[in-house]
Image 1 (cartoon, rainbow, N blue to C red):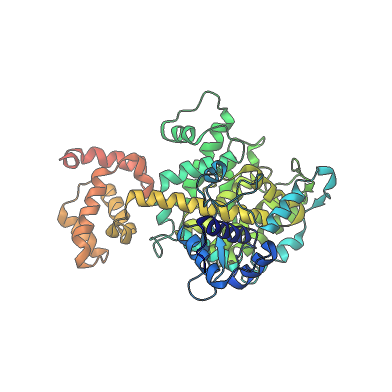
Image 2: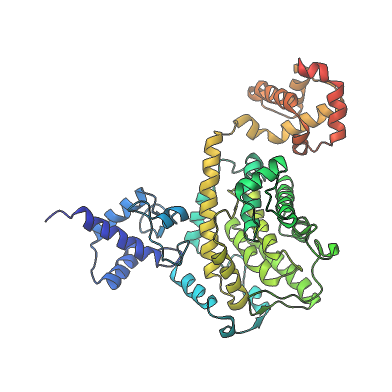
Length: 477
């Protein structure tokens, strides 16, 4: 048999990729992939050839599989937008000219419906049956293969650690990326660098408005709330109402609406959807959607569910979508998974996906945007984590004990001796093999303690100032 040319092999690879890209989000098994290949190209690809092409594509990171073993689902991996637009690399996943991210067939169909003129779309209002039809543990917006893939991509070495440990470790980058990524979807005029300068040095670009500045700073406060309160946040009224209050501060006509469910009608610009205006229904549906969100056991599904139903209900007078974007991080932070930053998410697809939920109760387009956005976030945070090196195992294992020691020492207004720190280690049941390292890390934390780190130890500035004055000489020696 004549050996195939490189061009012929490349054509087969591209053809396999195209078939996978037009498949459902859950991917395709080899049998279905062969059938779709034959239907599309009129040529039945041999199993051995298909397996070779799949191995090549997987090795280059262009596709992934739902699991190892026999007969997995094969799923295309989204190409970074900049690579797609520039056409760099012969193996880049082809994207339709009017797409910024790869979309499944059903997502494209949904998008086409949303791009019809407003006059051709049927006016609708809130449908309680949309939420009622969802049964946690039985209903799934994200297919199993997609959940498994995203869970694997989002996994970190912090599994099993206290809630929020990973988010705290990447706190500075998380605040910058999520503040910018989410604010940009609200029309923010800042660049990412502008956002970083504002948050780090309180500098704003000349063209920025006070609204831009407030939007970013509100996001920062809301992210800090989620991370610092990671142990207690949940899909409940306390968390969501406080989250909204932080995001809406100084941005609403009536400050009383910050963190309060709305009691008057609102409209949605450029949409034929009119949210319910009945306060009693808003109250009842708000509690119902939080109850269902809390009952979902998969953190990825939980994250997407709140992005679907919180904006659909529109429980607040404004800032519903940005509240849902940060609320989507609740389960990710608590499970020590990579957070969702929304960096690079195309505004048009995100908006159309959300409007499709409003007008059609269709999650297909928003689902694809969510999956792509999470893949992108995971890749960026994984690179950050690698650049920082692996976390110190002692600090990771005894994080809460170290915080107790530092707080107790500060409140004692004394500088500890090594023997005193050793006693702390024994009292906190630190194993003998780890006590010396524990004492060294506690001493390091005390010597480097400064006002910017007080929240980590639940200390007040006045407590730190009193202790700092009392131990100044010993601390600097």
